Amino acid sequence: MNLKILVINLKASSERRASISKQLDNLDIPYDFLEATEGSLLTDEWIENNIGDRVKYVYHNKIHHSVNRNALACADSHRRAQLIASNFKSGYTLILEDDAVLTSSFKKKITNTIKLMHEHSLHIAFPGYHWSKGSFEKRLDINCSGSGFSFFKYPVDGHVAGAHSYIVDYVGARKLVEDSLEKIQNTADTFCIREKGLNQSTVVLYPKIVTAGYFESDIGYLTSRINLAARIKQVTYSLALKSRTVHYFLRHWKERRL
Image (cartoon, rainbow, N blue to C red; front, side, top):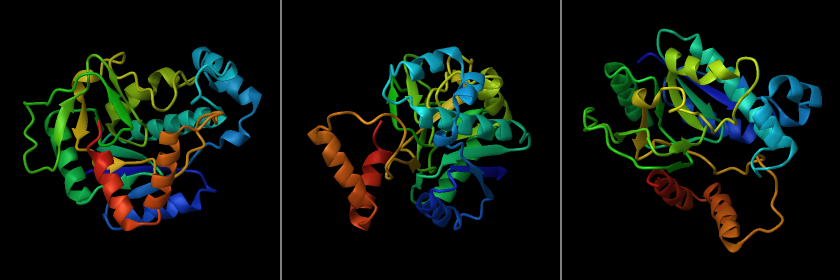
């Protein structure tokens, strides 16, 4: 299996680094850390020179709660990761964020994913994602029996959001990053798969084999009010870091949630 793993990690995030390292050390798959761009260090000059006009407008006017300085830094981290992957012409790169949680039997599942991607000339696969929008159809032309998951077509009437885990070959990586070489045109979660002509060569895995969101995030602005559902979510995720039982049930739910 010609796969390498690239983990995006802030130097100061030692708890996250330890968590993902513990999972990856058991896989016997090469992995490296990419030091993430730090939002607090971004200057106004850097933003002016590195962020495209549309994203810059959203950021300066606080049009969307998720686009803060840390989101811009996250987008830059993924741009650098995709550039590295675009130069790996002999295999595939799994780009992970440091809060990723791998499913059981991950090595077998990721091996099957890479094998099927190679056999069917696929450029991008989403082994995990936060949420999806649109109609999902199973790829009936790809036999995933015994793999522990199915391949679904990328939705033609929607999209998949979540940059915590995606697999690319050098063609897919090059396509993802090509319009952001000079200035970043989208946040990390916005892949523009259809717009870049990649929907036929992109698949979504279900159930997911990677989940995330167990650690607190500094992406986005704090809202003035926290409703009951948000509070329950905070408590549940906090418990999942302390209790194996809660962690198992939360991971199981996340893996099967579209």
